[in-house]
Image 1 (tube, rainbow, N blue to C red):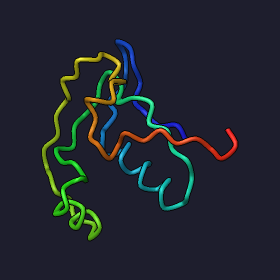
Image 2 (image 1 turned 180 degrees about the vertical axis):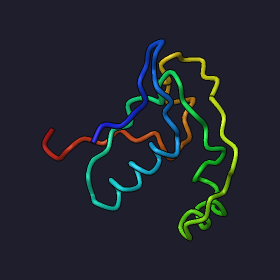
Image 3 (image 1 turned 90 degrees about the vertical axis):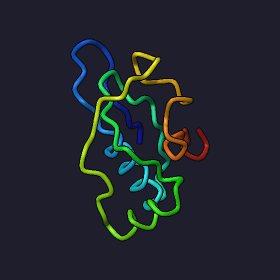
Length: 97
């Protein structure tokens, strides 16, 4: 599975929580996942799943943040992994690839 937001001047919004959801679903299904980029119009979710408290809330199905905002990233395509949440720096390949 390759996941990421669109780049370019007319890119539609891509919520980081959508990417996080795909990464989580792939892990549960044991499907390799490759996060390509956040995209040019990335919308932040305000939390990082590396925080243990948020992990527990997330596992319980809680919504942890009501407000969201457009991320101001240095890389216009949102492809610099150093600007991403640590849990989304996922670049897996299928076996034998």
